[in-house]
Image 1 (cartoon, helix red, strand yellow):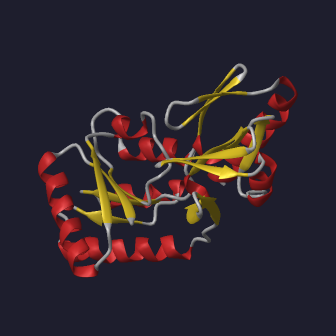
Image 2 (cartoon, one colour; image 1 turned 90 degrees about the horizontal axis):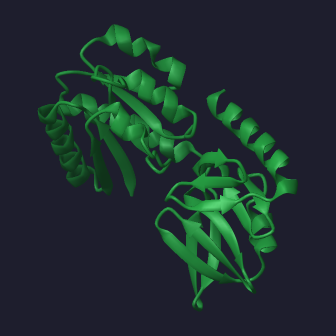
Length: 237
């Protein structure tokens, strides 16, 4: 499944792109989940780093495509950005936000397919890491990028993901060891958060995507903030 965001203020242009994506889905056999936003502000408000590809219009009222991409890159270094524009001179600035490429308006089906194939190739070159969880006597494989946080619950660990949660028998420290070095950080004795899903830090709490507010213990606040700062710095590098 490939998750694609269309950010386009013009309804006709958005409909054209959506139609092209559905045609590509039928011809390629790829499963696409498409979400449309009417402007850059709508995209960045409560942004969750769970898109694979963004088709991002450059010239939009309010928050334009470049400004939106700059904000997205602060929390999501992995999403593939393809600019859609009337003016190729604007698109050359794409290197500033690590955009893969651009498509000129009026967009042709074959031009979009070419960039989709390049985007999908980049996605599949990314190293993927998974947790294999024993749940109700069966196995579930979860991409670590989709894990929002881990929670200790007596003799079990709750694995909260962007799509739901899983209850696993075993201590938190066992799963914490499995995600070591993958951008996770313990914020107190009961929670380990995925830094890619941290939305804000407010005094002694951490806000993650989905709206949950998790407490940060006093001894762990300083190392957590340092780790988060390093992570965000690496995301923008």
